[in-house]
Amino acid sequence: MFAVKAIYDGVNFKPMQPISVSGKYEVVITFLEPVEKSFAVDEQPQKRPLSELKGLLKDKVWMADDFNAPLEEMKEYME
Image 1 (spheres, rainbow, N blue to C red):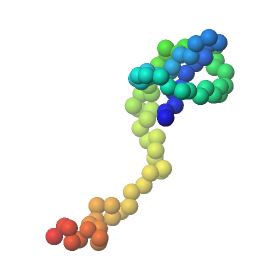
Image 2: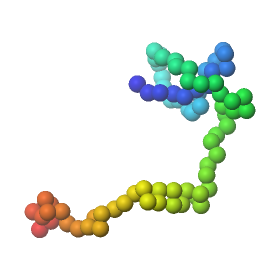
Image 3: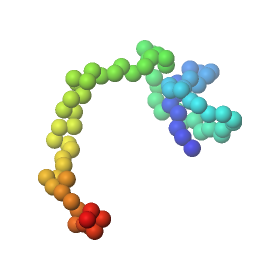
Image 4: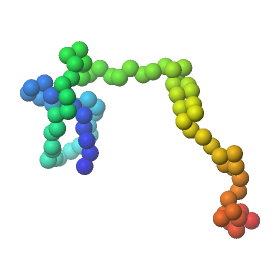
């Protein structure tokens, strides 16, 4: 089972990403919310420049000071 995001125009469903399946599938369609009229299905999301992504996780990720220290449990394998 997998989910596919699509746009429904009143007649057809247009997937927002490529789908590679073969054969027939039973589907369940859930209408989430109306889409803005200016939204184009073929339009790819704009990629953010790398400079905007730098520091995005600052103060949200940490690493223990002894991260590279040998584990006591692994001592017998490291000899």
